[in-house]
Image 1 (tube, rainbow, N blue to C red):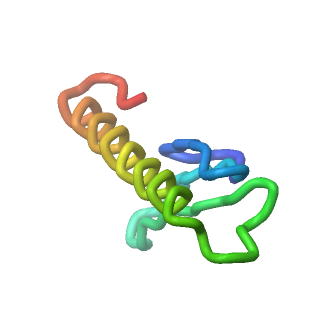
Image 2 (image 1 turned 60 degrees about the vertical axis):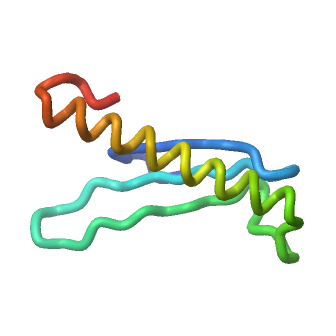
Image 3 (image 1 turned 135 degrees about the vertical axis):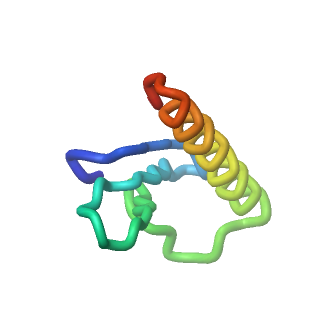
Length: 79
C-alpha cells in the first residue's frame, strides 16, 4: 500500500485481504483508486461467495468515502 493516501479501506475476501486506497493527486490530474490483494491477486476467478464479499467491501468503502467527503465539505474532519 502506498505510504500516503486520502482514503483507505481494508476487508477480507476469502483468504485474501483487500485494501482499496485513494492516493493524493496534484491539481489537474485524474483521481484514481488502487486495489491491492494480500498475499497476491487470486490466480483463479473468485467463487460466488468471494465475489459477494468483494462487492460488499467495495460498497462499504464507497459509503465510508462518501461520509468522509460529506464531513469534510461540512467543515469537519473527514476521517
